[in-house]
Length: 175
Image 1 (cartoon, one colour):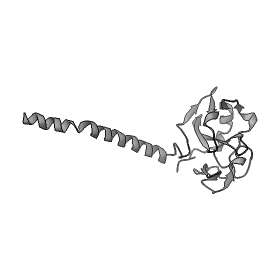
Image 2: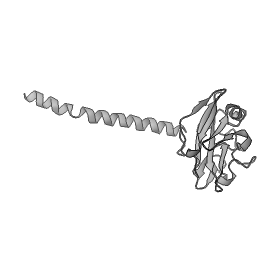
Image 3: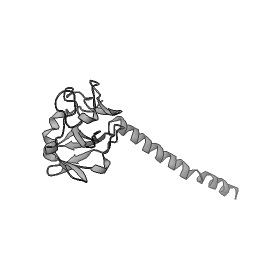
Image 4: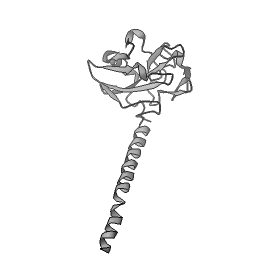
């Protein structure tokens, strides 16, 4: 009988130890994904593969004054679309790369307060300029005519995404 009591004592630790091991694995995987740029800490999500005939659909309800980044892959090219509500209440969309720093793995923007900042050159510009200013050290805009906007969503077609894939070099967001 004494042996049985000792066995039960050991078994009571199996579940808590297993739960801790699973939790540790989940945290490690999350840390690895964050280091690889999978989330950016800016509300990003899993990479969406967009094939010919498909589109990136952004629910309006997800868009706010905080920039939301939508990572996609088009024909093998990793890229990202940023969506944000500008101070005037309009929804703005653009490609998340710096037009001047293109070619750098760090040619992307992160939100700093109510501005976006290029991770290569450090240029900052206000949210009110997202999606409306072309050229220079800004995000390349996705103009109104290049997307379909309804009360529920914004849709960016495969064709528009593919036409802008050249803005994202193969080493983009690798450092």
